[in-house]
Amino acid sequence: MPESAMILHHYALSPFSEKVRAMLGYAGLSWQSVTTDEMPPRPMLAPLAGGYRKIPVAQIGADVFCDTRTITREIARLSGKPELALEGVDEEVRAFVAETDLALFMAVMMSSVGLRVNIKLFRALSFGQLLRFFKDRIQIGRTSTVPRISLKEARARTREHLADMETRLQAQPWLFGDKPCIADFSAYHALWFLREVAESTMLQPFPSVLAWMDRIKAFGQGASTPLSQEGALEAARKTRPRPLPEAATQDALLGKTVQVTPTDYGQVPSTGTLVYRDDNHIVVALANAGDAVVHVYFPADGFEVREAL
Ligand SMILES: N[C@@H](CCC(=O)N[C@@H](CS)C(=O)NCC(=O)O)C(=O)O
Image (tube, rainbow, N blue to C red; front, side, top):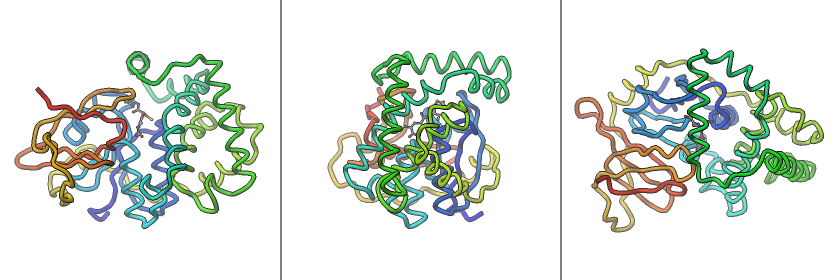
C-alpha cells in the first residue's frame, strides 16, 4: 500500500465510520483498516490523536485527521472530487451537513435504541465491556451540549427528515443534484444505523430514500487491507508531516501548547503545540517517540482552542 494511502481507525458499528467507509467506496480509494475499541482507553491511538476520543480518526503517514469534516477533505483531495469536502460545496449544502451531522444524527440515534441494537452490542462486546460501554455513553450524553429532546420528539424529527429527503430524492437521484456530494454521505450514516443495525421499520414509507441508500451501499467500501495498531503507529513514526501553508494571520497562540476540545460532546482535549490555524482548520504538533512528530488536524468549527496552563 503506498504511503499516501489513508489509514482509517474505526470500528464496525460506528456510524461516522460508515460515512467514511461509504465515501471511500464511492471515491474508489484503497485504504488501510485499523480496528479500534468501541470506547476509550485507546492507548495505541493516543500518540496519534492526543486525547481526542471520537471515532473515526484517519491518518496519512504522520498527518492525522480528527472528525469526519477533516477526513472527507482528504478523501476529496485524494480522489479529485471537491464536492466530497465542505469547502467544495455551497452554503446551503454546508448547512444541511451541519444539521444532519449533529441534531439529526442525535435524533436518528435515539430513534434507533432498542432490542436489535442491544443484541448486536451483546455480540460485539464481552459483558464487562458492555457495562463500560453503557456507562461511557451515558456520560457522553450527560456532558453533551446538544439540546436534549424526548424520544417522542426524536422520532418525529427523524420522520420529518425522512419526508424531506423523500421529496428531494423523488426529484433527483442525489440530495443536491445529479451526482453525490458530501451531503449524501452525511445523511447516509445515521440512516444506515437505523436500517441495518437497528433494523427499524421507520424507513419503510420512504421508497426513494431506501433506493438512494441501496445506491450508496452499492458503491462498496473501497479496497481495504487490515493494519495493526502498532503498524499504524510505525507508519507515523517513520515519516514526517507534510509541509503546512503559511499562517495567514498573526495568532498569539501559534507555537504555544494548547488544548483543542470539541464543543458538542465527548469533550476530551487533545494537547499539543499549535502549528497552524485558519478559518477552517486547526493543526497541532504532537511529539512522539524519539524525534518523531505528528500533525493533528481538527475542523475550526465546533472545536475550542485554549492555551494549556
Ligand atoms: N463530529 C464527529 C463525530 C464522531 C462521533 O461522534 N463518533 C462516535 C462514533 S460513531 C464516537 O466517537 N462516539 C464515542 C466513541 O466512540 O468513543 C465526526 O464527524 O467525526
